[in-house]
Each structure stands twice: as structure tokens, then as C-alpha cells.
Length: 639
Image (cartoon, rainbow, N blue to C red; front, side):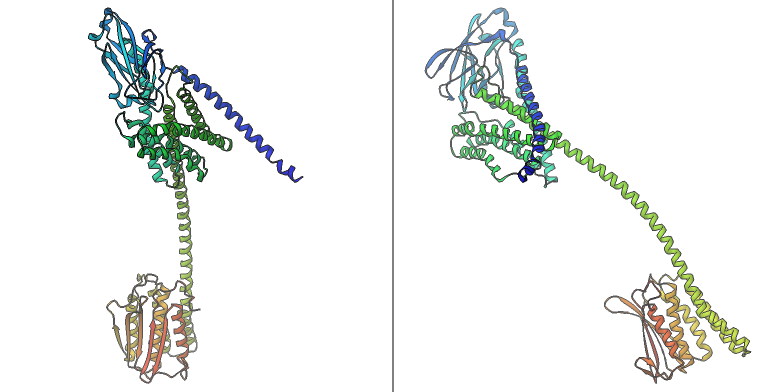
């Protein structure tokens, strides 16, 4: 039962794979057929009326008749190259048109002579001798060389491998008739290749910049390196033997298998898979060709390229086709379909070229895999660039939406802050109203009650007058505390000094006002009116105790700013020269009149976050109020 349960989920999965893979393979078969038909339809049409097919070939010391197109038997013949000898007919009536000799295809280099005079040598142009470029050649025949009737044409074919030499049909006739075919082939096999390579170089720069900006995505860098190798193959002319430049030849020959291996790596990384360790073996053929090219002579790297390089390209294309097919089955997206179709086209072109290499196709040698390969790279690079640009557009769109949402959230926060500020303002106003009512009730209210009680008992006018003055004083204190002093406590102390001086004058008590530091007290932006009231009432209590109980003649008030290491703080000291009072354990003893006032002073200091120190002896009483560095927000600090 367990085996049946294990096999059950695999059946739908297999059906899903088959349902996706079979249509994809059928599509690739159609693409293969379309590619083959396209290669046939795009085959350039040459002017057959001026074709010369019958030649006599002298090769390896023997002569024999041949029919063009023809493959030589040798792969390396520079000292004694194959010599093709043929004839064409010229009429004097055609002299005004101007005649040319046109060679659609050859490998590797040719030297054409008419009536013994050389009119074309492709070795003068290194790019004309590239087997992957299918470069045609045309040359005007000077009218003085042409004879009425039969004329001789010879073609020397220089071959330096690794493939056998090949000579396509030779055309001799009016230049006006041959030139269109030459320009068509040049457009298809030279100009188009250069255009793709130039576009490839631009995309390589763009992809390199994209990789530098996004180091965590190596797929851009891998494709950029592959494109750079393709550009090197396109624009660096290969050496023409007998020129010995083995290092450059090794680089050019090794770049093709290395480039194909990089394309496989790109496919694996592009579809989100990890590059396996054994995948580095795919780069071994290119490395071997390069090292051998640096050490050995020129022929050996070309032989290794035929044995290792070309099969590596085919294996890489096959692996890339498998990778894209797997991606199609798993992802079912446009990118995998597009790349898979492009790989199929290139693989078909590579098979077409191999058929020509192994002489299975004997009527032509037109290599199209390099052209299709460049087109595939350009298409992939353009697709990556488009995907990157689309991602940037999505990022910009998301950024715009994010900015809009942030702006909306900011507006909501501003509205919330405004409501909270309004609530805080209302709460502060209510707290201030409550505090003001409490101060009026505890201070002025009690004193008014005392005045009423004294009046009802028929007390003397002086007593009622003192009580009324005390009530007026407390009312002024409450009113003064409402003033905005900007956190400068010195302004409130200045008003208190005037009231204290007026209070002490009837008792003949001198007030000594001292500011020990130039700045007086530090500014406190957090200072609130109820802080000022508590401080002023502490000072009032100290002065009142000195007047009523200490029998003092002098009262000194000292104001200074000290630095305790964590910041400056203010200190207000009030001392008198009265008789003092006795203290036991920090509490008063034998001075019942002053005990409630001292407890109130400590309570008020605690509510302000200040520290109150009391000292008294026979020489007088000293009250030291150490202000906090930052005043508390709540007046319930002291309980």
C-alpha cells in the first residue's frame, strides 16, 4: 500500500511534464524546419550566366580536371598551393562595360591571375581570409589584359587548415552584372556580422555596468564576458600565414569554446540554478587550446580547435538546449521559450556547418553558426536589458506609490499630531486651571477664611490688616507666576526680591542679595509656572521663619550656578543671623511653631525635583535649595 501511495503523486507530475515538454519539442521541430528553409531561401543568387565551373587542378604534383565547387585534398599548402586553371571568353564589344572576377566563397586565401597577371590577392586583407566570415571577393580586370576570344584565369588557393581548402564557383563577366551579387553577399556575411558585433560590444558595456551595480547577480557579468570574447573574435583580425603570431591565434581560437561555455553558465544562472562544480570542466578545452597555442607552433592550436573546440561548441549548445527545455517545463514563461527557440536556431545552424565541414554537403561551404550565435547573444542581451529597464520602471513606480503613501501617512500624522497637540494644550490648560484653583484655595482661600473669622470675632483692625496683606501677597504671587519668563528663573526671583524687601522693611531686617556667578541661574526651557510658585513659596517660608521665630537682624540670599560634572545646576541659599533652632535626626525638636513650615518646604522642593538642606545653630539658620538640572513635567513628583 505504501508503494502505491508513493507512486500515486508521481503520475500527475509525469503527466504535467509530458504535457509541457511535448508541445515545446514540437515547436522546436517546427523551428528547425523553418531554419532549414530559411537557409535555403536566403542563399544568395549568383549570376550563373558568367559562371566558370570547369578547371584543371594541379595539386601535389599531379593535374586533373575538376568541377567547382571543389574541396582540396590537403589541409596545409602554402609552399605549393593548389592551382586552378580555367578559361573564359571575352568579346571586344563588351569592353566598354568593364569586366570583373567574382569569387563568392573560398578558404583560406586566393590569388587570381588573368592571362598571367595577378588581379586579386585576398591575403592583403586579413578579414577576407576568415572561414567564419564567408567574405566574397571581387576585382576589376584591366581592359588591357583582356584578349578578344579565349582568356586564361588561374586561381592559387592557399590553405592553412584546420579544414580542407574550398573553392566555390568563379564568375567572370561585366562588373554591372557581378557587383549586385557581391554586394548582397557582403551585406549578409560581412556587414551584418559587423553590425551584430558592434551591437554586441555596446550591450557588453551595458551588461558590465549592470553587473557592477548589482554584484549579487553574476548573470550580467557572465554574459558580458561572453559578449566581449565574441567582439574580440569579430574585430581582431587573425594572423595570415606565414606570419607567426601564435599567441594571438591561440586567443582567437580559444575564445569560441570559452564563449560557448560561458553561455551555458549564463543559462544556468539566469534560470535561478546553482552552477555545479563539475561544470568547470566545460572550460577545459578552451584553456587547453590557449595554453598549447602559447607553447607550441601555429598548426597545433588549429588542429586542437578542430578536435576540441568545435565539439565543445556543439556540446555547449546541446546543454543550453537541455537547460532551456527544463526551464520551460518548470517555469512556463516567455523568457525560457524565447531563449529556447534562439538556441534551437543556433544549434541547427551549427549542424548545418558541421555537414559542410565533414563534406556531407559538397556544393557549398557557407558557415552561418557564428552569425546566428551573435544574433542570439544580441537578442539575449537586449532581453536582459529590457528586463532590467522594466525592473527599474517597477522600482520607480513603487517608489512613486511609496512617496504617495508616505505623504498620505504624513498628512495623517500631522492631523493626529494636531489633535494630540490640541488635547495636550487642553489638558495643560485644565491642569493649569486646576493648579490655579488649588493655589487660590490653599493660599488665598484660607487667608480669606481667616479674615472672615477674625472679623466675626471682633479682632483688632491691625490683625485683620495683616491677614489681608498676606492674602494680597499670595494673590500677587499667583498672578506673577502666570507671566512668561522664558525659563529664566532670575526674573521671578527679581520680583520676589522686591516683595521680600518690602516685607522685611517694617521689621528693620536687612536683605543681603548676592549673585555669586555672572550668569546667576541657568536657563530652564522646561520651567513651568507651578515650579516658580513652589520655589518662591519655599523662599517665602524661609524668610517668614526668620522674621517670626529667629529674631534675626540680617538675611542673606545667595544665588550661584555650580557644575557637578554632569552639567550645571543652580543653588539658592537663604541664611540669617537669628537664634536658630535645635534638630534631632534631621527633624526639628523644641520648635513646634516651625515644624509644619519646614515640612511644607521639603514637600514643595521634592515636587520640583529640588534638594532642600536645612542647617541651624546658635549663629543662625541656613536653607540651601539645590535646583535640578531639568525640572519634572508633573507636579506630583514629590507625592
